[in-house]
Length: 103
Image (cartoon, rainbow, N blue to C red; front, side):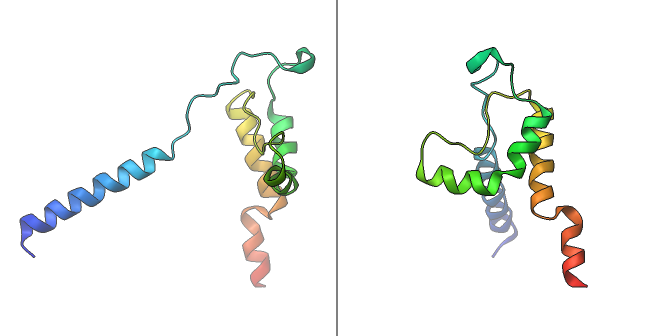
């Protein structure tokens, strides 16, 4: 393979990888600035923490019904996301779970 063919192949591979990664990017949140049932505001950190902790059960239920989703789109943004990820890590052992399993 010549140097120009290798460079062309690397460029094509890089473009394909960039397109694949950009296809996974999150879109806009359709629930922003909408009211919830009962007039409550958007879900915040504590709801994100709770919904992250119940994710395994919610995921199984969401496979059988369309009225349950694993992520609340009407949220406050980064604080909800932080709580959600923290809740998931609490359930699945967090960053130190792997080191305990090896001992």
